[in-house]
Amino acid sequence: MKILIVCTGNSCRSQMAEGILKSFDKNLQVFSAGIKPEKEISHFAVKVMPEIGIDISKNYPKNIKLFKNEYFDYLITLSENAKKKCGDLNVKNEIHFEVKDPFEARGTNEEIMSEYRKVRDEISNLLKKFSYNL
Image 1: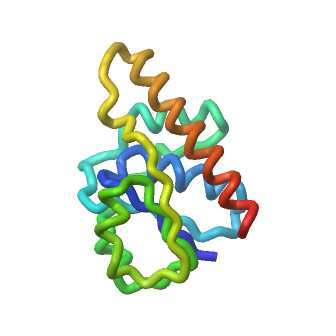
Image 2: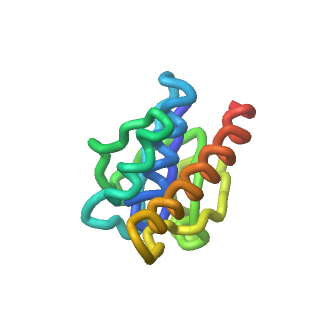
């Protein structure tokens, strides 16, 4: 089973989702990308994932164009913007979850970490429901 997860910057939501899905089943081939990738993965995303036993510190943002010529069983989009721009990918099934971008969080480090935790947990819950159908 080959799955591509796409958001806008591939710096937090799709990176967290990739790590979470891989933790469910090591046999899944899971990739993430962004339609306009950031230069690096969010350090806040990297910091909240070990709290649930997942390390994404070696991940880096990738452009969706890298996957243009590949086939995927599932495309999971995490933003409306990503959903609109994935039309030319070769996928069997498309699933969309609208998830708030924690990259836009402002405040103290703890307030920002709290937003990332909320998004991480939301993504985890959505993907648990999704994975029951695999």
